[in-house]
Image (cartoon, rainbow, N blue to C red; front, top):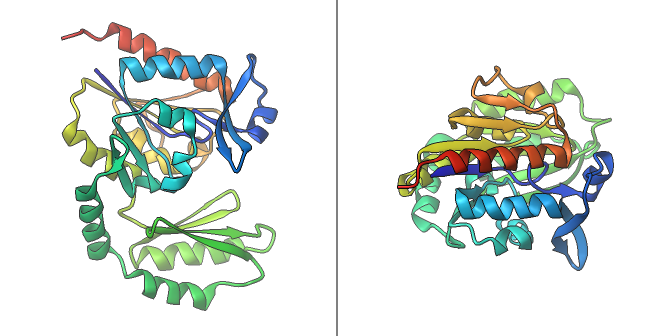
Length: 270
């Protein structure tokens, strides 16, 4: 059995903007709606491939999205994966329900390794600027996402924040226009490592596009990342278990899922 842990956005599913940048060769379908508006898409072809992957592997969606945002992706939820991981590792879903033992264990880890959220916010309030800070979101009582003006936020300011909060147990990362503040122990790979205790598998395959997926890819037996992702540009070092694909967008997703299916067909059925 193959354990297949995969990021969602820009790895398996794509925004309308991404679909326009990297036009697919086959017809697209909507896999997520918000208030009746189409938000994320796949092609009919990759959707069919993912259905087969779900049937032939232990497929685990892994996302930084908040739990309610993950639940909007109706196509993924309709696959009824045995496990899913949301909130960058903050929540493990077991048959669609949060696994409370992990929630409690993670809470203890955060408490033991980083300053309290209230103290972190006091530090942040003293250095933030309304000139570059546009709005802030607190995700699932775990971490912050700050939307920032990249033309105003200076590189030196960012580096100073990264260094200061690292000393307090908080990870600061700029992804596009989003500035993440996370407890350092809140990672996708930590949740996967915990979840693995309940899984029976022979090979672990992982896929993801961003630096937030680095740890998940590093822990896998085999991993894949797309050409359009930023992981290859921000990674601490090259991952020798990882295929750095030449494909972008849906072309990457198609190649990824076909590879996973090919490997699944080679597994010995016990």
